[in-house]
Image 1 (spheres, rainbow, N blue to C red):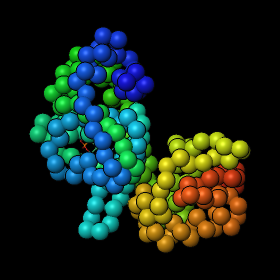
Image 2: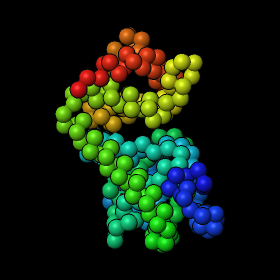
Image 3: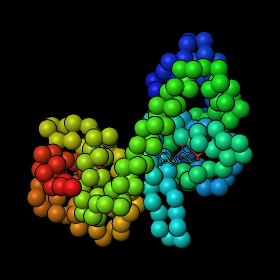
Image 4: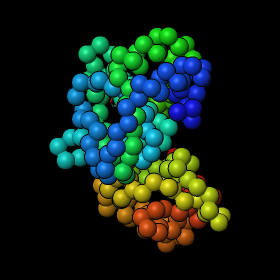
Length: 221
Ligand code: CMP
């Protein structure tokens, strides 16, 4: 729990007492954790796996965020009176999460300025990213948005292996399309172009960046 950035400034004592209040829950792949509009009753911290936060409109989805080990989510509705979930949460891989009851979290946030500051810091970062997502959806064309998503995924989830960078989260073309507000076919086309140009390779559904400079050169605003 010390490794969870949100809790890293807590004293040993606080950490010990808060960890006793965690519940552990396991989810299979593609399990719904909660739906938008559900009442918010707990905070989630990811121990392992990947969780997708998304909104849905009939059949179309827009992914707002991907969270992995050490990340938390579900804080928005529990910080509001009678708050409901602002989006859906679903696992993309088998995942283990810790949950913390709303009242417990609230109490700790009120008691610990360092926890409060961490929460604000992460929230500001998420707001900044949301602004960027608005910008990109408004001003960038689909191809650029896809190229940018591949670059961003490699920065966030990339692992360097033998000179190339492997994106460690397995995403279908449809999932990438949901992240940038487009259709699967457009993602397939751009990824094919990147493979033809030997900028990426794809193995076992994982994307590897073989030529990062080449990828960056293609992203022109
Ligand atoms: P909550 O509203 O309780 O449930 C959905 C959660 O998704 C929300 O809390 C946040 O933790 C997270 N979330 C919602 N929108 C975004 C966003 N734009 N960026 C990152 N996380 C978000």
